Structure formats: structure tokens, C-alpha cells
Amino acid sequence: MTIKRFPWAWLFAILAGFGVGLFYAWVVSPIKYVDAEPHALRDDFKDDYRSAIAAAYASNPDLERARARLALLGDPDPSQALAAQAQRMLASGESPEAVQQVAMLASVLRGQVAANPPLAATATSTNSNDTTPQVVDSPAANTATPVVETSEPTSETEPTSISVPLLTATPRPTSTPTPTLGAPYQLVGQDTVCDTELAEGLLQVMVTNATRKPVPGAEIIITWNSGEEHIFTGLKPELGYGYADFLMAPDVTYSVRMADGGTPASELSIPNCTNTDGEAYQGGVRLTFQQP
Image (cartoon, rainbow, N blue to C red; front, side, top):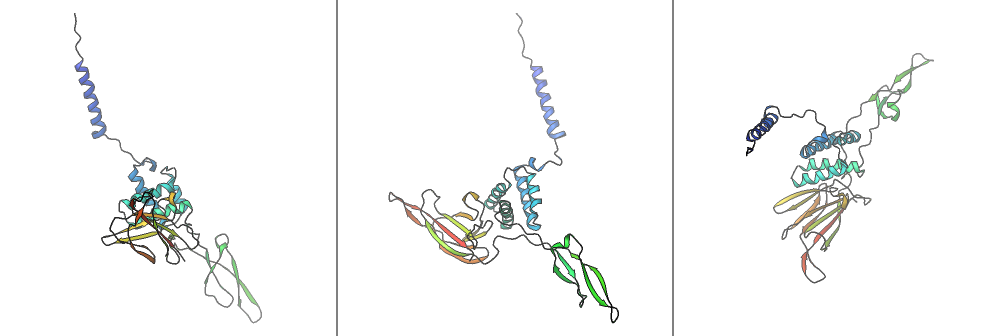
């Protein structure tokens, strides 16, 4: 009777070949990605890419260019992706300026904040009595070269008409509009919220403009004895574009104000509430800021 031996040599050869292949692929000649598309980036690199787009838009508010760049990431909803990233940036303690740039671009994409209007073209003109160029508004200056006739006496009886082309001035760049332009916000509402469905100690802030429309991207500063926190509206669009919230700690007194000034809310702390069974629990506070 012949006993078949296990093919240890073959098994060793297979394992050795597999190991040599891994060593070659990982160490000797690893795969190098060159000119990869943005949608193929890791999630953290995608966040960096969105932050760069938001910073570029803040410097030069070209919305169509920002849309085209964001489309390269392949996000189903670029505005939602930006809003979620702004929330993560707040949680990780990144600079308020960077967070506001991302939140602002998300708000602009949703149409809640208007993009910068195009600059009116400017031109220079002269008149018959003054040859000093003057800057005037001219919407048609970009499409044609107007001609202005000036009369300059060359003799006692016969004036001469001279055609002078208008010069088009180069528009100067302007900064991105912020959602807090106008009068400083005023505190118009401060309510105690007793709702067992909400988190205990939840501080809710609503920010509206003079026409009572929600304002996204508004910066809110919360201070207490041992710290300070900056939050922004519009990062939870499902609760409203002018909404922001913060969890208060027990036995701590807070002060809340808008970054642009106005009326602050002070001496805030977690209120005590009672449910229908008579049991005590901690409630929350709702603040409303509005431009006059």
C-alpha cells in the first residue's frame, strides 16, 4: 500500500512566491498614484480640497468656478457636504475663519446668501468745457466703444468736433459679502424650553435678518468663566438655516452674543423643569437674535 505524502514543497513554493510578490509590490515597486482625480481622494484630503475651494471663493467670489471645482469631488449634494464638514471643523477646534468660509460657501450654494453681484463697468468722459477725465457708470462700456463729441474753438466762427473714445477702467476685486451686514443683531427672544425629547442643557439660537428670514453663516460667541466657544448658524439645515446650538454644562453661567456686537444674553444657565409625573429634569434655553 502506497501512502501519499502531503506536498509540502509545493505549499512552501506557493507561500514563498506570494511573499516575494508582496515584497515587490509593497517595497520594491509600490503603486504610485499620479494626477488622481479629486473624487478618488481620501475623506480627509477631500476636506482639505473643499477648504481650499471655500478659501478661494472667499478671495474671489466666482460661484460658477466653485461649483465646477466641487463637482470634481462627486458629492451627491455639495452644499450638504460643506455643511457637514463645517460641523466637523467646529468639533475639531479649527479656526473660526476657516469654518465660516466653508459654511458661507454652503449657504451660497443653497441660495440662502446672495453671491457678489457683478461690478458695474466704469468709463471716463470729457465735456466741452473740461478735458479732465471723469469716472462715470456705463453699463454698455463692455460692449461698445462710445464716442463723445467735444467742441474746441479753432477760430472765432467755426468749432471743430473731436471724437474721443471712452476708456474702460478695470474693475477692482471686492471681498465676499458676510451674512451679518447691516445693523447689529438685537436679542428679541429668550425662552426656557422644557422638552423631554431634547438634550438636557441644550442652548438653541435662532438668527434672522430685518425681514425675519434665517441668516446662515452668522457667528455666535458663547463665553463662561473658564472658556469661550464660537458657533455658526446653518450647519444643521434640517433645523433651519439660521439655527445653531450648544450644550451647556450644569452649574455654569454663560453669556451669548453675536460676533458683530448688538445686545447680548447674559446670566444663562440650565433651567429646572418638571415632567407630567412630577419628576424634575434639566431643560434648555432658546434665544432669538434679529436685525432691527
